[in-house]
Image 1 (tube, rainbow, N blue to C red):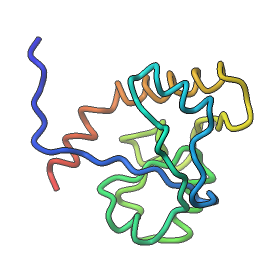
Image 2 (spheres, one colour; image 1 turned 180 degrees about the vertical axis):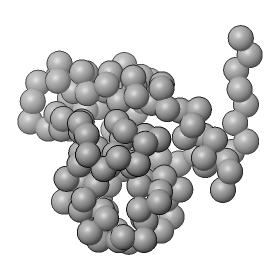
Image 3 (cartoon, rainbow, N blue to C red; image 1 turned 60 degrees about the horizontal axis):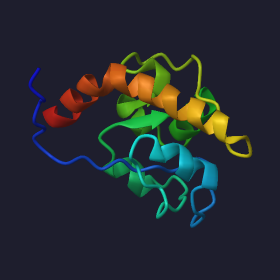
Length: 133
């Protein structure tokens, strides 16, 4: 099977609805990311800003409460905002991802696997929507 060539580079930005700014990824987060050949050693946390919402082609909330907070801050981004596990469905209710902060490495690994599972299901649709813009 031939690998599909992407038209552009894509930038993925992480921010939190109540995140402090400037903190590094946890050691377990860095270790779990290595399984995917990802390097989080230079990652710094940042809070969600209006500017980030403006720049985003798609916005994925990890939990229903995060989704509600995003839409409380900016109702005008509703058309490009999804509960991660529901994409591409616009249903605002559903299951969120558990935050592994403060837990063991095995929980981080489970979270990374869960994110990977959903990205695997949705990646083609994500790319299609971004490339249409």
